[in-house]
Image (cartoon, rainbow, N blue to C red; front, top):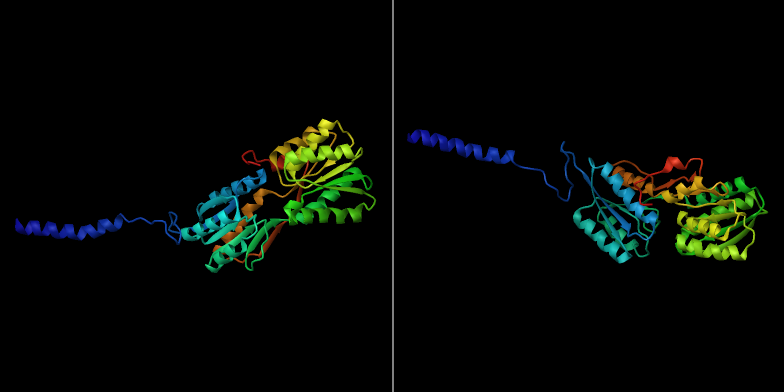
Length: 325
């Protein structure tokens, strides 16, 4: 009997470590989780501004959508902020979390130092849209100057080489407005040097578009086209035209890629409504760049996405009913 008990005890002692090993699980750590096949998941952080504009909301939406699509390869964390100080704090949080790459949309001044510190810690940085003065930062953006070029071509195509065009610039947007206006004006000089240009300042909101363009209409009895740089502004412009009962304006441009604006395109047969697509969906390319870098692939330091023109002829191709913009 004693021999039998001794034998059972020996077998039990042997089985304990075997059973313990069978119960071990892979857990999340600073080097990233693993999928079912044991492949390491890269950690990518996403930093975006808090919603101040529908387009900004759609940037965060599209970035997260792409990260979810890559769930087999990527573990992600997304955060939004209202100023540079808050974004800097979130950048530190992502470093602590173990981010290997960060896709950032740093709309405020003062982000150069914290981004440089993150890079010094070995984190790959991919900026969306915004260009900052830090060597080694990758960037994905649309072509602001080309938006102006394509807007000028569109207006000339619709009204000819003579007429009056109201330009709605947005000085507070910095290089965005400067480049879009530059592309527009320079192209018109070549295509239609006799075109009369009227320049006014506004903002990228429909409220400002309505208020400012209502005032412009009272000052100008004849306007043939409007070069607006943003879809939100353009919605306000169209409302001002409707409320004033004006029939002289034949073209209103826009920019961004707003679903509500797209739906307006076929509704009005008297005005050509156009948007130079500077799509928030471009941020998906920024997430792709981050993953390629972590996989050791060679990537161009700057990826500039060409402009696509959307009007009533092709607007259906750009619908996304789930987009917040």
